[in-house]
Length: 418
Image 1: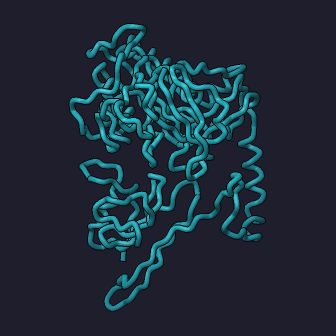
Image 2: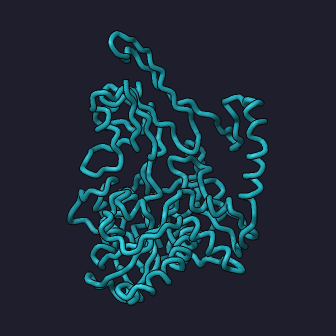
């Protein structure tokens, strides 16, 4: 018998697709699959409606498959009943995901799994040494940083990542005769921004000392830094793909309209620093969640400007990003591995750490690189975030009104454009 490990599950497969669960499940010799990458659950409702996936039993094309959430939230189990004649065969399979904890109504974590004292004792010294290391201060923040409202406008966390990436890439580009004259932009996303992670999956760092653990919270993935070269047309398409995270808002409807779908992927909402633009969510998304063009005539990106002037479609830019995006992760235009101008061995997180260490104080100005285009005041657009965001000021151009708690413990905000 054989097993398979794939990134995840996509609704439709294409050459080079990053999630290959369905294709592997069709292969002879694959008896079970362990999936990840998408931070979702199987069995569960996250993949309902995808051909070949049985979300109740946890199978893909009849093969048992499990995906166990994210950050150790669940234990994934595939229990196989085997029979052997000339070879082992799977006769029955049972798949489940067990949560390790839950939160009560006040947000207190309640463990659902018992600790093993012998394991705790064996890991104690290494655990304490790790905690001591990650709590080491590396800099100082002038103001709090959070991602509670990062999908509504300018955000200090994203700004800090972009500042660090541009600072790292600038001398590398300046040393290259073919790149030195090109403007350097930077793309970054809010990695912890609620959604499928729940109402406590946000970055929230108080003013004062910033530690190694905080840098890892801001940039949790071990990506390595890349710089790609794009023209103005591709830059606009990159932003169109990013803006597809939002649902379309019907300007003629008075019904409640959530701005985001339930399982949005915040890491695919790239904010490109160094240009300014408007996102018109009353228009249909040009791209779907895999990066395929689904509405060729649709345009959400408006007034794209560089240094106050409209972006020239033929102008060349350098965009600092990461290896995941530059090699095709998320299906972004201009990012297929062929546009990489600078490839570095260093992690984006390390570039961020060095940037923080180099400054006496960090005070990222959350300049609004983007904002929403206005919609009618009659529109009831809503946004889910953590209850901790209730007292935060609204991004420029928006009015936020709390509407109480939504299912799952999120705070629901009404979002009005001014």
